[in-house]
Length: 58
Image 1: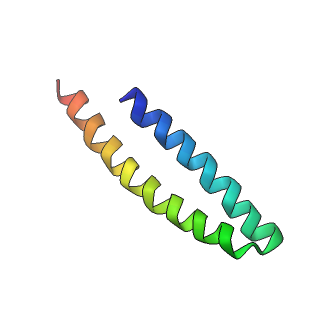
Image 2: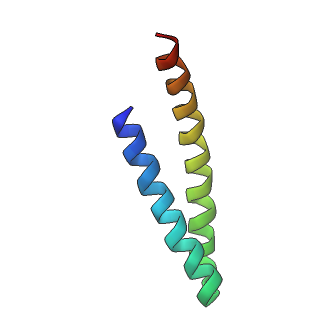
């Protein structure tokens, strides 16, 4: 679970950086990277929820 949390933090940070580049400078490539990071972040957050619920049931 610790590794999953670290991965989520890293992806959130990457998303924030690329989203800011798109917003501030109009960087289209950064927008594409931000969207990709958002998809990965969603997948990992769903996995975190699954793991968290399983841990709570123990």
